Image (cartoon, rainbow, N blue to C red; front, top):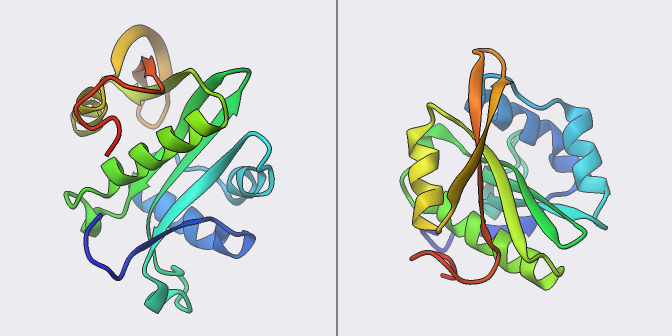
Length: 166
């Protein structure tokens, strides 16, 4: 993570509108407020991690420049959502968030992590490959707007990958 002015925190209810706005800037089929609210409120199965600038917390975007949503159920972790503001990309924020989410998933008892990624999202695939993820199947027409297949990727939560435990 770059610069001392950014911190990692658990998202709060007050962050939901800012998360929805950032989501809309990053994804073609964005989550709505209800989806984020459900994830923020249910800490029993996972968490919404945010990277923010505390100095900008009073602004409508609440200083959030990146976020990661994960769940852990029955020993499996699912990386549900990960996004970095377009103007903040290529600074290591996605790697930072992914590493922290994996560490937290391990603490919650997860043994394996799964995720879906658009077949055409080469930047995200490169990130996951650096962390040791491998493709195990394809979900045909999983995404809409535009319609696209998803690659299902997995790896053990602990170990594997050059950036697995930064």
